[in-house]
Amino acid sequence: MHTRGGSSSRGQSGLGFGSRVSSLLLAMFATMATIYVAGRLWQDAETRLHLVEELDERIGQGKSAVSVDDTLKIIACREQQKRLSAVEMELAAARQAGTALKKMEDEKGIVLRFVIGRSANRGDSLDREIDNENRQTNDFIVLDGQVEATEEQPKKSKLFFIHAVETWDAEFYAKVNDDVYLNIDALGATLSTHLDKPRTYIGCMKSGEVFSEPTHKWYEPDWWKFSDAKSYFRHASGEIYAISRALAQFISINRSLLRTYAHDDVSTGSWFIGLDVQHIDESKFCCSSWATGSICAAV
Image 1 (cartoon, rainbow, N blue to C red):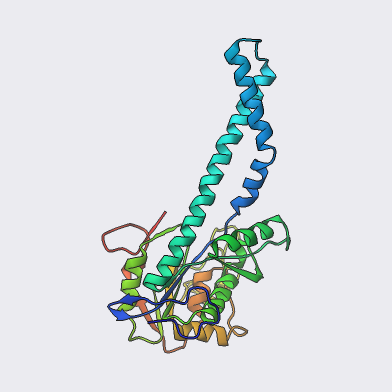
Image 2 (tube, rainbow, N blue to C red):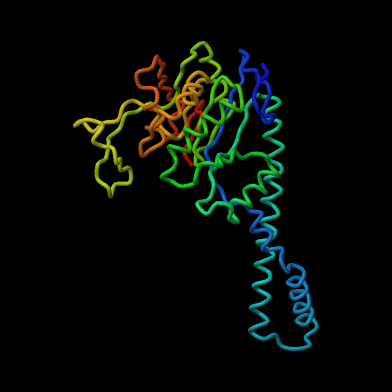
């Protein structure tokens, strides 16, 4: 089935998983653009190459001894050439990945995007290079109103769902961490079995301890809101989870009312408290180990 009325031309495609379904899978990912590095490496590249060739010729002809400085220059230039070759390979891979993403949208109806906020120093070189890379690959969702920072992840997740549901009309919207290996076909097949459930929240469900110590890695500043039991409400693990279209629309409509906590998975779970939502505890979404039929594995 084709996406219905998405506001962006990106990713409007069809997908068949036995039943007709269009799924939207987006990975939360913050990255440094390699193009900036490439630009720096290409600078004076011809000069470096000429120097290496000239010094190699001197050595081959035995005209004169090579000084320590010349030797260091040769080593440095060769290292730069290696780095330049590596960057060229990365850029080629990025362009190839862009083609693969487009093919996946056309053939499977799955849209995959890396989600990133803006630099705290808005408009700096990092922002510019992300924009440049996105113009080439078209595989980013750049959240202009969101700063890219660890403590901003819950707000970033909310903005992601808002942007996604307003851009693509899909049956499901999924959030996947960047350190998770994902079996996309298995994910699509699993989601297709839940098409008859309009208000669905699928993931590796847990509750977990609330930590009140500021020095703890998973410190929750609002720990006092979770009763003396210090236990979170039921929510899906943040490595990967998916929500149906109705829930994504609920987040979009009520964006100003939905608060966030210290962690994005807890925040997402909190938005569905008290609603008629079906929580599906799917073991295939538990990424701690890889097994046949699994959807994900932590890297």
